Image (cartoon, rainbow, N blue to C red; front, side):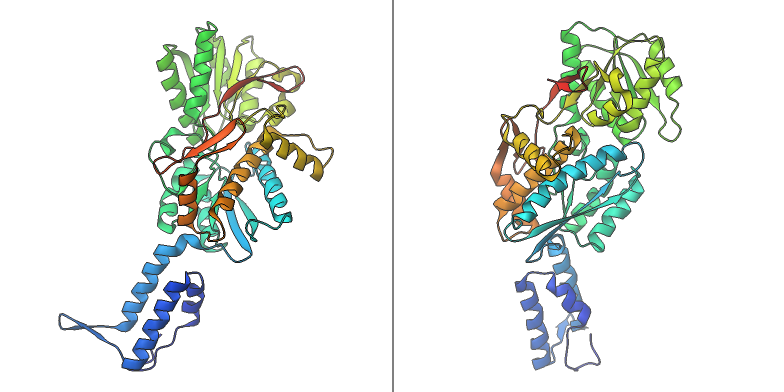
Length: 426
């Protein structure tokens, strides 16, 4: 930046580019310092030492970048969102449905002119449910894609791994696909949950099992971030209900042996099995148990996809009970359900409504509502303040609560059973 002591000072191209990302007052102050230096050949003397003006200005740039780093990705015409998601492997098809639902909402908003004149762009990167790849994807989204906000990223361990990055860059993560209590017990200003917690889901399951007189309950889970989180919640709920588990069977995600897991479950002679996993792992395990003589009732968490279950199990899906964290798609008295069905039909008249797609749609609908309420002066701080001041945002029976002490979103949970037609009955 400097040619020689006393030489006129000019902002480099890189500094100008960085400055464009900041608020006008910051840029104005920097240009003012440059002008002052050129007029007075400014130097600062402290304790007998000369503080180089270049060092002072560089420090100002660093501080300003730290203060406003989370406001990138908002231009006069665009709001950039990004997500690291599991788009391949056993969970891939389900997560793709989340994205399709979200884009259905974003496309509708963009077609109507966007949010306060800004259209929403949404970039998804596949992490294959790998924590390190999720971290790398998130860094790429922030550093290269320059996103304003992370949206609907998937995974418990993956979400936990990027929390330091959110704090460092002052970036919001809205609607992560996880219900882990460990991510909700401590208030984090940069994380906004939408879905209800796994703790509420587990409580509903164990409460119902006790109420109907079931005495023998087993748990199957995959030994990964999701599985361990579900294990913890089920054990807490079983203790609270005084209904101890007769077996806890785990599977290695790197080399799953469903036949062995099914055999161990059958030997415990359970009346009900809570399945603590999702995707193909969920259906492969149930297939394996159905190949034994054991005939328990299966319970699944909301992360288990109804569409995938029907596709893989066909008529054998009947009787599986799933926790649901979104209203029934058959309940057309709820406005957000009507909105989703209307937009889906307009896009593709023959499209079949999807519970996973609907969940992504509701996440996007809630985000858009927050952006609209924030107004044209959109920044990380203004969005956080708007959501916390809102207290509650309701779409009929589905409500989400946000305050300056909690961003835990919704507590909506219902249990539904798959009927002979593959539909959920609440």
